Amino acid sequence: MPARRLSVVVTRRLPEVVETRMKELFDVDLRDPDDRMGRDDLVAAMQRADVLVPCVTDMIDAGMLAQAGQRLKLIANYGAGVDHIDVASARQRGILVSNTPGVLTEDTADMTMALMLAVLRRIPEGLAEMQAGEWRGWSPMAHLGHRVGGRRLGILGMGRIGQAVARRARAFGMQIHYHNRRRVHAAIEQELEATYWESLDQMIARMDVISINCPHTPSTFHLLNARRLRLLKPTAVIVNTSRGEVIDENALTRGLRAAEIGGAGLDVFEHGAEINPRLRELPNVVLLPHMGSATIEGRVEMGEKVILNIKTFADGHRPPDLVVPGML
Image 1 (spheres, one colour):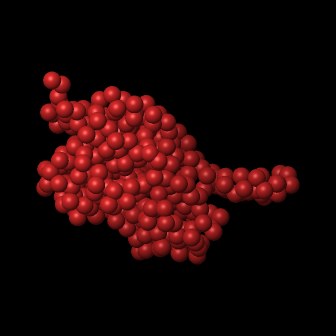
Image 2: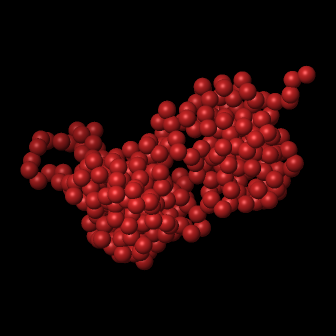
């Protein structure tokens, strides 16, 4: 008699090739239509599944995990960040958590550079003028932005993505600086020609562009708070493709409106889709709908990692991308 296949519940639609492979391997409940599960739906899913496959829009807290029952054994997160999951509570209840690190590094770094260019060269303003049919021809003083080459880039978080951003920025002629929990290996510093700052305050006060590439953890919540934002040069630009909670969004908005900060390129926001409406009004701000990792190739690779984690677990082994509280 064949072994029982794991029951897997997927909370959002995934690329067709990923869903098809999951169907071949597991007893899968796919999401259709592709809308966000409510709290009660998530709890019900955890009660009937051996494995839950959530994503960043699914907030899974201790109270929900307490209702999951005995069946759920693995939360195979579709994404690298797991700040939406109470990992410590899950582990206490014998529920493993895995993620999909590494596959979105290059895509997110590409979008970081795109946002830098968009803000510094005022690309959205030019695009809006063209789409409105208001352009009347070239003039020497129109649409003046700032040159990227020669600017100092301060990277907050020098992990995989931070290093990928640094490599791209070097190709544009930027000077690389960084702040990190721990100083990276000397060989990496030498390769990137990167200057390490132990003091975040000292670094951000001297940078032309700040790129946020650190995860959201209790220690990074509002790491760029009102006090630190006041240290920025009035011409400085902030780019965030990591997590919105790292910045005090209200303080950032006040600084941008008062011309105390030169501009911002944001792909993530402190309160998810609930964006401060005053940000939308500012011409020196570029807002994107959390699309930094949105490539077909990246989404498929994320799905392949999820499948590998589930399959390894089903075979009685430790998932290769297991998340433990000490990593956070």
